[in-house]
Length: 189
Ligand SMILES: [Zn+2]
Image 1 (spheres, protein in one colour):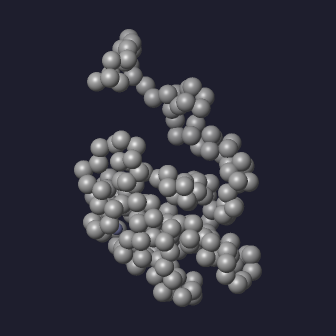
Image 2 (tube, rainbow, N blue to C red):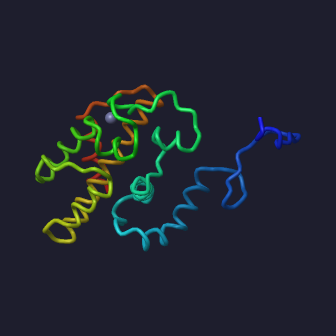
């Protein structure tokens, strides 16, 4: 009510405004904004991978900072959330680390991905950055590390997409399909 007291109604239709340039909100405006700022991010975030699409690099970078809209982050920002439990397993609190790494459903996907790239399948990651640091710390050429970084970013991106499919479209995607999509994006990128 306190917030609404300061609201003034104006004539005309409501519309979205895109703050960076004060113009009408469009997806293209957001894309231009991201691309025009990606050099700064590229210099500032050590895991930026030029083979990975900017939107996915940005997603992983935001996950690293805990800034993707999972339930516990939404609740911290005052958004009403019915229940904090993970949308996928229904057990743990849905935090960035739980959703992308700790959730048993995500661990099953990680296990398949690790087997695919011939890394030990018993490796477990606690946080998204933990996974990328693991790659950095391994023996191997920088080219190989760049490929594995790409595959790991694709894995987290698809876990996130699968979660959103379930939340927003009530679509349950099988692990096999997620793995196929990870492989297909990895080859494409
Ligand atoms: Zn879970």
